[in-house]
Length: 552
Image (cartoon, rainbow, N blue to C red; front, side):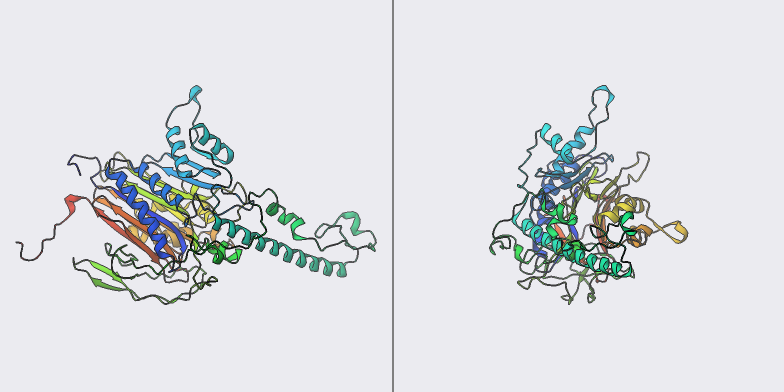
């Protein structure tokens, strides 16, 4: 590295995550490889003078191109069978560019970057440039700025198509069952009140209540394909059903879609699809913390640890893992644990476990000039309504940056990216709330008063108090799932903090002084307990060089 002064320090770092949820042990390797590749390429850019915004754009774009992630190519399909993506990028000044529900764009994060760049340039007649575009307007902006607008089915992978067909069948079956139950309820009501007759179930006209019963009963055996509830499923779809709608993708292809999420309700609870792979063999050492769950991408065979928490999330039970802390060769503590024994979710047809992931991917970077940036991208939930905008497109919800104050001697700045139940994260303003807590090292105490704590305690309390105990979340019927990756930069160094109440969370990081990325598949104890960990990169003036014995 060229020895010259750089404002804010001389360490560049990249941090990426591939989503919170449940990653099966068989598929762990492929998820971590996607994170490692993104971190490695982004660090190459940073070492060559690239900015933090350049790095997060590159890292997220690589994950969008990876079919295993729910971003860009291979994303979940809407109820109409199309791909609509969300993405956001935020620079070190807090300026942002974002797209929501955009289709036909290969890399939504690159479009978000173009919007960010355009928002910094003045328009004629004192018009205010946009920093968020959605739907066709976003696609038009991409075309006007030289980006390729692809055919509607270009981003639809075979695996995503198989999932969509299976889930559509589940929706149609659910609609048929709902019609049967509605007919039964209406029949009971007719028996109790023979004067209440309607031409269609659920519709009672005032004139019918006082009229004598009709001798002709309406035909209630309405086919699900003709019902209002399923009209949106079969009309206007971008995917045509062929004669072989249940065909599987060849087993030698990258993804085995024949074992992906047999039921839609399983996806709605957890998320994504499965890619059978051999068991992963990754472990590593990070800066030890009382509650770390970390592993090195090329270390000894699979060890992982976790922390325990009283905060609970109603998910499938899991046997706890008991981590052991052993000193490493360099004197630092290392996390290790025996192979976990769990009661995993149901397996696919080939015996492999299904991945159930909330796949908002994200990245945070610090460049050699001390600037920080963050980005997120997602294809959204499966079978969503067209036009639904998720947290990955919303600043302060899926992505947030608190810029450094010019009068702050410590030059503190914070960036956060989140993954989880988007509607709950919107209710709690998850990214901005977490960034504020870590920036100030505070947590919400009794009576809503803020109290000084460490950053580890702050992120844990944010998940417990500000998210899971939020009145809007507790009174919702949806699962309160969240994973948070946060980076705090000060004059002393760059510090990573992460936490999640999901079963697992995939992350990787790399600094400009490391030869390879360091990755982790963080796993909690199950039952919704909170797992957390982190890592620290300190500036050179704070480091102590270790000499082997006998060199003095």
